Image (cartoon, rainbow, N blue to C red; front, side):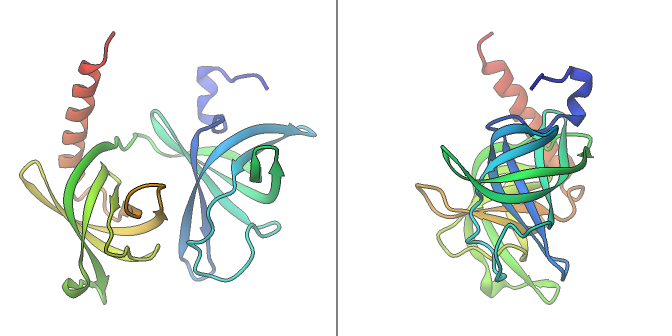
Length: 230
């Protein structure tokens, strides 16, 4: 398959080995995000197929078999200057390298934001407090460690038992002498080979603390760029 030109980048599918997220939507309005990685991009009878490693379905609370025939879901991935999404249908299959989902695209990819939320690696103590009846429930708060931070969300880890995907929480931490208390939603869990369980959070209002987080992120990015050899 030929590679697109730079001007066609916005319509290009994710590359092989790219990290992606599959978003499932449920009838009651909830959704869950399943991380995966692109194993291959195939063209079958003129139709492009994205082959991804079979995602971990243990985080699904609802009964049922996935993927469901004909059900549309969202495939999302990052570009250097934006985030991309495309609607797809999925079929379970196998390849010599293991179980996969074969995704058939529905429509064209589209940008979902114009600027990248720069992620900065960190190791900050944080407090994760579930929101119960519209207010933080202090008695259910757990200690966590902030592993990655971006204007739009965060990655945390904790041995204390993470809230289920879909839970609304308040994430509190101190970033360069400023206390941040951000309303967020748990979008997925991740159990690494080593270390405590992790959870990805999406901030419900990225603009609330976005300016401060963005300034810190840009500073970190500039420092990293200066430290790289030419």
